[in-house]
Amino acid sequence: MSFINRVDAGRCLAARLEYLRGEDLVILGLPRGGVPVALEVAAALHAPLDVIVVRKLGVPFQPELGMGAIGEDGVRVLNVEVVRMAGVSSEELAAVEKRERVELERRAQRFRGGRIPVPIKGKTVVVVDDGIATGSTARAACQVARAHGAARVILAVPVAPRDWTDRLAGDADEFVCVDTPEPFFGVGQFYADFSQTTDEEVIACLEHGRPPVAAAAALSQADDPPIRDEEVNVQAGAVRLGGRLTVPEEAVGVVVFAHGSGSSSRSSRNRYVAAVLNQAGLATLLFDLLTPGEELDRANVFDVELLARRLGQVTAWLRSQPETRDLMVGYFGASTGAAAALWAASEPHAQIAAVVSRGGRPDLAGPRLAAVTAPTLLIVGGQDHLVLDLNRQARARLCCESSLAVVPGATHLFEEDDTLKTAAELARDWFTDHLAGGLRPKEMQGTESSLERR
Image (cartoon, rainbow, N blue to C red; front, side, top):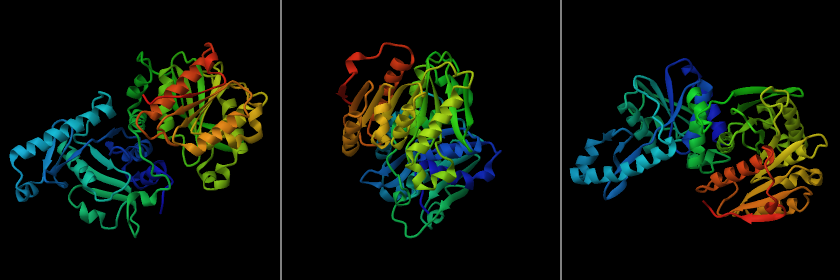
């Protein structure tokens, strides 16, 4: 069995964990790749999500050999037998722990942003990763969770070697895995998309998985909760499409997200961008362009006309909602979703105020490009050479106000440090300029900019 991406893997794993629904649970994701998987589990089981940051304590002269692990709040778990056999002195052990604790605290601060960890004492804790290879990190996480007072520890992963429970016997009370295929060479072997998860994506997942009151407060720098923040179902022709609508207090515009192939409304990248827009006073609607059954047919994924029609139907629904009916509408598209956004914006009565494409394929909108009137920003990674060329060609066919922003060092998925943050801030500025009634940036019209990494 293989998974489309970590979102797909998380949904499959959540189905295996359905028996836990209703228990006093906390879902802990291992950063980085385990957190998007854990978010899907937490959402399905209606349980709080948190990150579990651990660091292995390696023997000084053989770092790959673990002699213990550390976690937050000063927790330390030692394998006394390894320490004794390796002849590690107390001074050497203290030096290793001091070094690793500095890195642990840095990562915890980065992911949590100063928030207090979700309490796990006396609760059932589900430790989630995107797969098991050697199992050393998962073992450390289970031990640290138990040391923090978890009443029951369950280790859950989408994929692992057949002997994984033998390797980790005693570290968890239960083991749950979707598939244990053979031959097994590595976790990435079983994912169509196993791209690296960024720190920003981890942070976005944690924001999305926080308890509702805390999450709402985080959406506004003024600590005002959104007036609407909920899962929605939208009728689009004969199908119902799921998504999430977030409307901050005194919203100045609303942005509809159109994701690309292999992604979903729960895309951690899009959620991160949405959070940045929410903080700027923009409402957001993240939704799935296709039903789960339709996604199985690859022809649907690249049917830009179908995707654009769905986007238009969802926009009509959005304009019927009391919180958003008076707001100017923008489209944010990624990959094939960018083509759908431009196609939908080209419709004669669309009245779309702005379009932003991130790593998009505007060329797939073909002859409809010349009919787009909405100011359009194309954001492309400097290392995404093929897509950059396609964006330049597509922009030449646009007759509207447009700009091409090239983010140096970024590849197609903006996985590199701070590149996704840069893209989100570019989108935020474009939308606030064009949706909030501000002056359009005349100096950007007809230009291409190259942005230094921040």
